[in-house]
Image (cartoon, rainbow, N blue to C red; front, top):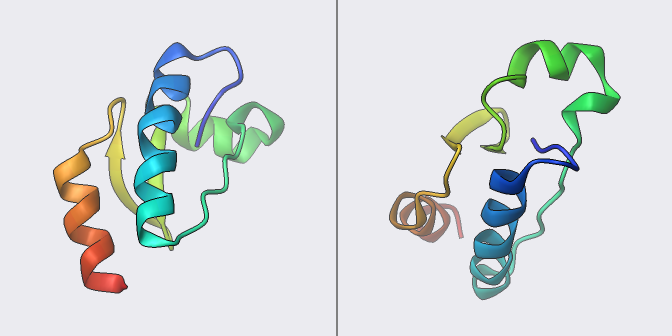
Length: 74
């Protein structure tokens, strides 16, 4: 979950994309401001990294946690 004007969102995406490529997974960036329900859920938490509804991290990418998670599902 992201916002177009959020520098933390841009930072997380910049670190996440190479990690996703390393594991061969796709990243879908969803702007919470395009959906009132998503905005209500994630407003102050963005950026939020989710997989199948499970929150992996928010504000900053926890590289070790995400790497461990991806290695278990791949």
